[in-house]
Length: 192
View 1 (cartoon, helix red, strand yellow):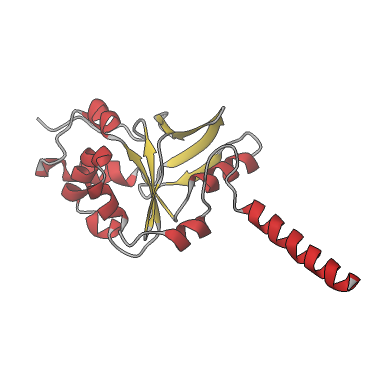
View 2 (cartoon, helix red, strand yellow):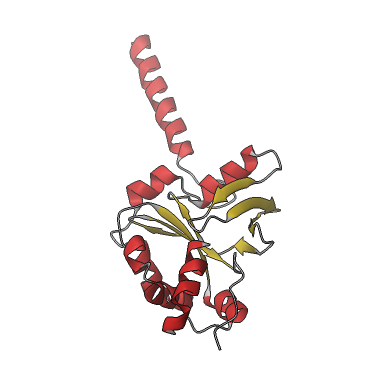
């Protein structure tokens, strides 16, 4: 009887500890890359950008740049997506103009890194960096450095452009959208 009681208590303790691991910490319900892949919706990054009104400007850049197929494919990416006020306030460019196709593509590539990175992944990388910042290379070849300022995550490009990761990340079948309050690349002036 004592052995059965110990077995039952041990099983209960293991289940109780396992349940604690699934609880979000006090910094929020951040998900790991494995969680993203397990819970990703059936929509792609391109579809997620099109569906979310916060990214109307970036969706327009995606459509006119010719990169829609890449974000509609199976490759895993993280898009550091400037929300409309950040994109519209900083560029002043009309990316729907065919003359701006190359500029739009360059701007978009400067905000995409390979692999699906959740906020929890980025925080863990920054914490492991011992204050040096975690670095990631974009599809456009730009080096981004991620640091923390209090609870905020800051992304800084090699040209000095920086933005704060804000809002709620969006999971997609082929990656993650991380909203930004600024641009990580300084676009060239619009053609005259």
